[in-house]
Length: 458
Image 1 (cartoon, rainbow, N blue to C red):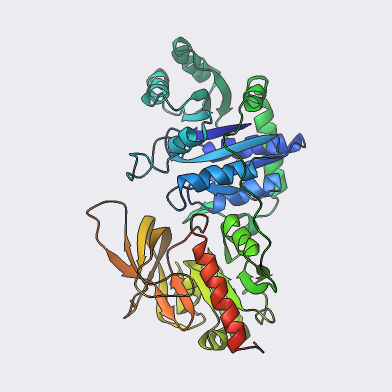
Image 2 (cartoon, rainbow, N blue to C red; image 1 turned 120 degrees about the horizontal axis):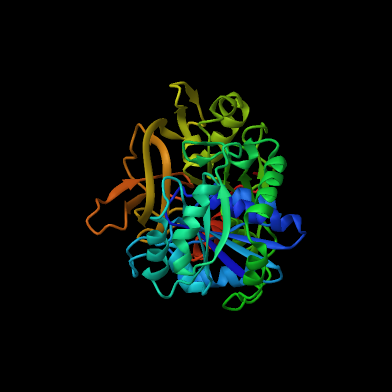
């Protein structure tokens, strides 16, 4: 039982539609599992808060087609409804083995799930029919189950749209008027994460009320009920080795970009995850054997991170002693000498990496095929895989011996180098999903066990 919420392009309102549908279904006390196409971290936070279940990313670029099918099969079992939020426009992907690899359409074909297409109707009337017909006919393997008309200005505007679409016989399954009073705060990397917002339950109630009146549930619910997920769930993973390896996970308002699958894989391979806040705690958790510093917004919370001087000094000492550490993007920034925020204020950080992180207007975004130039607790020298980069900061000093060679999916794009290997620290701007690469956490946990042998009292 599943449906994909897609947009004809970015910014048409598919996140609002998805959240509204999830909020309505959750109010019916139905078990709902959500998924998100692509590498995004923030939209899934909203999904998870509504459903009470971790939202799962479906990204064949970062993982593989087989992993996407296995992930969906595993997590779609035992729930009443499965909703997948798409990414960008329906056919927007990267030209790898398919022209639209990793797109919402690719996932729809792969999982054989129909699409609910969201159309932005502002500044359109009769032309909406041409857009709808084009999307419905572009790829016969992608089934458009119906349309959601968003940002409809008035009853007269709605009548013009419906009259234009009537000859196409495409079901209109929802109509949303302009919602000026219903907004979700955003900033330089998208929506503001849920940990920083208050009164979200009021917002979710508003979304559920909107969904109740805007969507044609008499058609949608049977459609969901008639859609059977493809594939079968994977076998139960073997029992993890004992004793468990204690891994500290930085998780608070400053650091919260983690794929739930990465954390699950660590647990399945024998890790005990110890969640801990660099904002609020003066010391690392006791008896840890490894550290995972995920991405997030350290630039927003730089004053508080800088004020926690006891932690910064203790962490620096422990890292120099060889604690195996994996730091992504925001975690990399935290390990620098300082962070300069958008206001031009500079705040001291951990100081392991001999560089400063400075915020700017330039957005670095996209998939990267990386090759390890050094061995780290995570990668072996020469290993290649795909990652994702998404940040507005730049480092003032490049490493003399870079960690990674990085190239986008464009065949003539330049090969760039970045990332740091110092002591047993792997620090890079590149985000990695371990779903298609179980050898990465395996290697990390081996390094963590070795650290405990070398520093038994750590």
